[in-house]
Length: 364
Image (cartoon, rainbow, N blue to C red; front, top):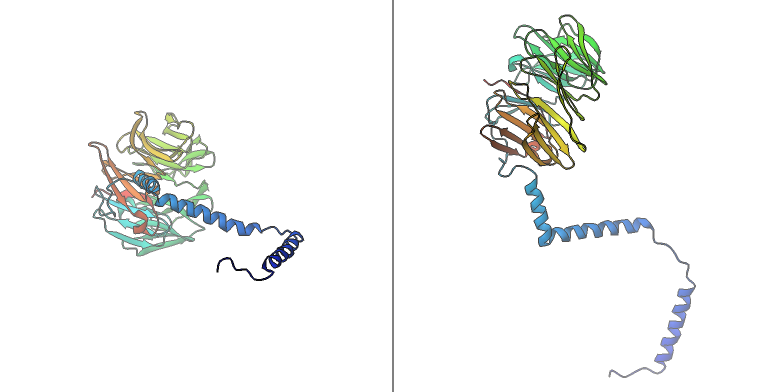
């Protein structure tokens, strides 16, 4: 029966409550360790994020972000190059040659690499060695030097030179690995050979850019420039492009400033290159979480997107511009006239890590 109570039940309950209450009032308060709270807070945040994503509104935001980063309808892999030639790429996944048909060959676990003139051999670095290889990855010769970086190869089929950095110094060696010598101190920026006759080499120091004559073994041009990160000669060898985070400058052979351009406040210049066969310059400018490729002087936007663009590399025929886009894990190929855009996705999956493009060589 519901109303049945044992004799003295109410009095016993009151006495029990008095004992429990007295014990509670005499307790010593103990604070809960903060380390127990952190997992609960983190768990609550994760649960909230999961709930937001699983909600219709959350799924819509994630879908929009995915669409915003990367070229829509990009190829799921790099099936082919849009122009003739071969790419030489390097990175944590090693050094690779990519042919126009999309086939790839891994040369080995090399850090930096450069084509020889005419794309016959490859100069690469590994540990404390400068290495010359053929296109199958077979070693032709090695040169032991401390932490070599940024090899650059120039010359004819019978007389070539390789410039490279080692231990904070610029060095030059013949293409057969002989006659190595030191030029002088240098910043950690890839040296650049001038096109055409006369072996002229541009390299950087912390606060200046120097043009050095290999034949005379003397410097004949020194220009002040703080924070240079890239050097490049125009195809006709008349102009030198110097790229830094706060702008680009173009110098003539006599040191005259041909042109300069600075990014707007809040933006930085990431990379720049000459348009092949001209003195025009394209530049990557990053502003906040967005990047764009702009043709300077004309102020024409060639391509833009969310995240980080890293490099600009032109095809050997000068018709296609490769834009590396690590944020989207893509390479984007842009053809200006007529305008056409081709994207290749999952780049890091194909090379073991997202690579750096060393050069796009040799139209035929």
